[in-house]
Image 1 (cartoon, rainbow, N blue to C red):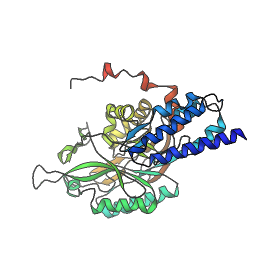
Image 2: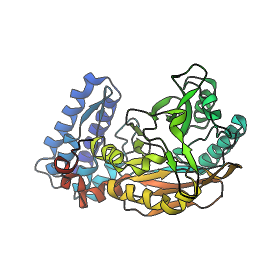
Image 3: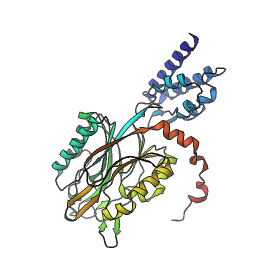
Image 4: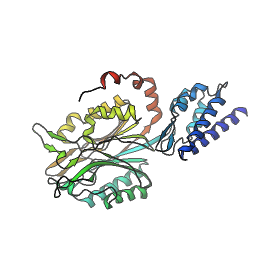
Length: 382
């Protein structure tokens, strides 16, 4: 019938727009033209009003030579459930999930030791568990590959991201067809003194083909003297990074951070409001004392104020007689609800579905991005 033919035309046009996404930037005009045509054909119909596409066309943007499109606003504006469900089934990006689709993310909890091979075997078991639980992305905690015993030992193990250690984790992702968030790898950094090794604390995102999709060097280094607790100077052997990191993935647009970063909300505000992050990765190795006091409240605060999912894989238990981690790997939704948790010293993988339709619906109903006044309170002299 006429309505069926209309649905078919819309489906074909959306598939054509999707194909344009995989082409060079020169095809941006082609994709824009396709969406403009969709908007024109919608005029005068009750099935999909022209306003339904306003957010979609405006959301076209160029990034690393490809077009990134968001249809969430338009799809939610539609008054026709059958048409919405038809469009939702179409993947609108080469990496990001389709509107309405749910993808699963997992957090792995482990107790890393001073043995590279033993840690790899532990991570391999976590990857296999995540695959069995149908995860699209698994996040592993800070220091997943190594935790040192004496001062400078971790830095002495640092290698390039092109080295043999990272190559094994890349192959692990490829063999199992899963994205990995490797939260805190010892990457070689320039030395100030010839005989003193230094490193970056680097969060590496690996895609399901085993390629490095993105990397982030920890901005905020953990230099603290906790009352009645541990004194820790991360900067003694670690260089701070200089850049923020966002990247697209099957579970949404990732804001990539590490552990102590969570105490600096300005970073997450920038990831959300300047770079469109939807899922905030916070792999950690929290100390027990600070974890008991602050872990969950910090993670929930970042989720609520940014209206993002928070995915926080954690180290747990005693690594050796000098170091112990809090654990409590956690996944939190944009409303601040804990949707998955592995408490205490348990080891393994817990999972949760990332529902981007819920995320964008929440953002529409509580549009804090439009209510912000950065011109008033984001200026600083320091």
